[in-house]
Amino acid sequence: MRIVPILCAGLLVQAAAGQNAAANAESALREGTLAQEHGDLKTAIADFQRALTLKPDLIEARANLGAALAAAGQMDAAIEEDSHVLELAPQNDAVRMNLAMAHYRTGNWNQARVEFEKLHAAHPSDLNTAILLGYTYNKLDRQAEAAALLAPLEPGHEDDYQFEYVYAYALIASGKPDQGLPRMEKLARTKNSAEAWLLAGSARFYRGEMKIALEDLNAAVDLNPKLPGLYTMAGQARYGRGDVDGAVRAFEGALAEDPKDFMANLYLGTIRLNQRDLEDAGPLLELALQLRPNWPLARLEIAKLNDLKGHLAEAVAILEDLEKTDPGWLEPHVELANVYYKLKRSADGDRERNTIREIEAKQQQQPSRDN
Image (cartoon, rainbow, N blue to C red; front, side):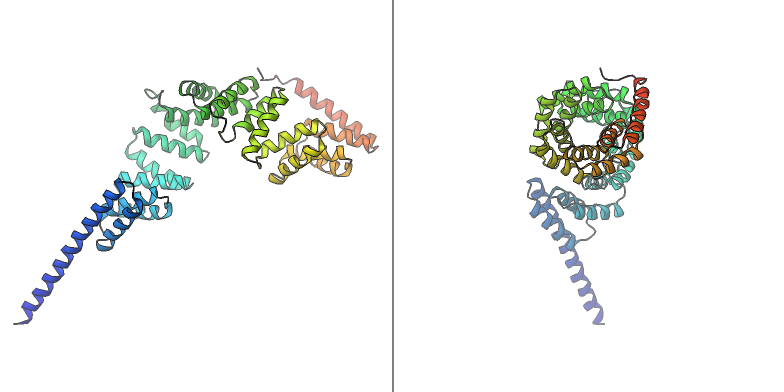
């Protein structure tokens, strides 16, 4: 008969301990939330972890811990916590958004896509989710899907910078530049966006529209000359328009920011080579080739450098390989003909000249897009 009171007392002690642990967990949660609101992430993380030690199923503490870890840059730990929360509460959209953003920030584009797609399916009219999913599709080179996703949402959001930027980019990159470029250039003008001018100028450059490309890129330079990649692209456009001095200044600016900028080394090396400045051209072109050993234009310029240095056998080997790889590319044939004649290989030189005439005849039938 005495056993029953002893057992009851034990159960009461356990219940009291459980209630005390729960109360302490809630207290730690409140303290962590307050620290998080004041930007004290270290204290917040410690408090949330203490709350979970006392009460592992306290979802709010785990969700807040994931957010605090992400804010502190501890993305892998944040992803682990957010994933745990969603196992317990799969309908928690706020945590799913945090998880998607953590994947996005770490470059896990496909994992981010999965989470953003779930959010978009649940809230198809939510603009922010659609924009983030569009960005993710663009990162995955699925621009056509991004464009299709965003097209129905554009009416009424034409002035939204983030929406128009990701939509215009998707249109340009998915083969619809006639629709995307006007949007991107309008965005650049209305928002004074160097990034938008750079993207539009780059697209114009690769379409061969050098005049407009240069106008767009110069506008970007005026707004933000420190924008990564801008000086390099502006240099290419200036070079394409025949402004060699302007191109040199741009490429030198690019190399001041990043000495291993491939295109800046290649183009500046090419300019110096054309000026017969072999001393300056050599290191630039050699670094470009080191950065991208199989890049055809870098190999062509190295072949030209070898030719001018009298290393004719090395030049021939490169040029013959380029000719085999791309028979319709004019310049290797021109250079190879010159080197063959220097080597007294007249028959080979004559053959190359005939090939040059055939390629030039075909090129004359193709209209230029430069305006």
